[in-house]
Image 1 (cartoon, one colour):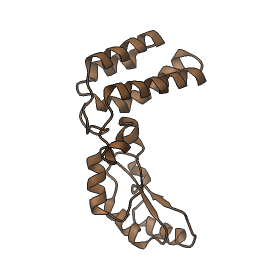
Image 2: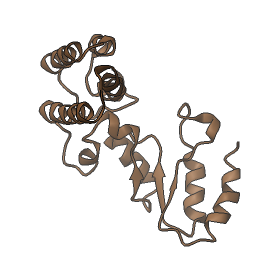
Image 3: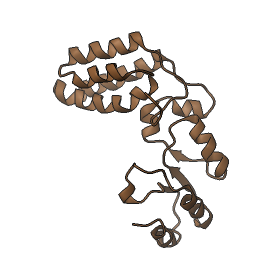
Image 4: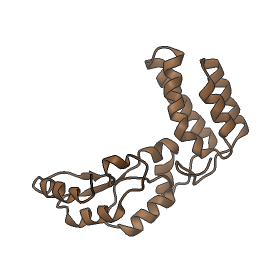
Amino acid sequence: ASPDEFEELLEIYNKYPLKELIIHPRVRSDFYKNTPDRAAFCRAVKASKNEVWYNGDIFTAGDWKEFHAGVPEVDCIMMGRGLLANPGLAGEIKGLGGPDKEWIREFHDMVYQGYRETISGDRNVLFKMKEFWFYLLFLFPDSEKYGKKICKAERAAEYEAAVAALFRDLDIKEGRGYGGEH
C-alpha cells in the first residue's frame, strides 16, 4: 500500500456529501509503528470537499499545538491511544490543566468497577485492566516495577494491592502521555 492510493480514494469520497472524513494518515502495513504522514494529510485537507478530521499520534497537549499550528483549518481530532494514556488530555488541550492523581485514581476505580460489574471472573477483568495500564503507566515516571506487579497479578486482591502501591508511592507528571518515557 502507498499513500498515493489515498488520492484515488479521496476522489470517491468527494462524490458524496459526508458530514466529516476522518483520516488516519498511515498505510496499513505501518500499523502503529511509523509516524503519520502529515504531508499526505495536508494534501487531503486541501483536496477534500468534506470537513476533515485528523487521527494520529496526538499524545500530549504539545502534540496538538504542534499539529494545529501546521494545519490550523483542522479543529477536530480523534485522540485514541493518547486519551487512553492520559484521560485528562482533552482538558489539557483546552488549557484546563492536567488531572491530578486523585482524579486518575477515581477514573481507574470507575473503569475497574465497571468491568467487575459486566465481566465475570478475575482473570477476564484483570486482562482488561492490564491493557488499560499499558497506556496509563506513561503518566507515572519510574513506574516499571509497579507495572510489572500489576501485570503479574492473577487475582483481584493482588491487582488491587499493586495499584494501591502505585498510587501511594508515585505522582503523575503533567504533560506526559503515550510515547513519552516511563
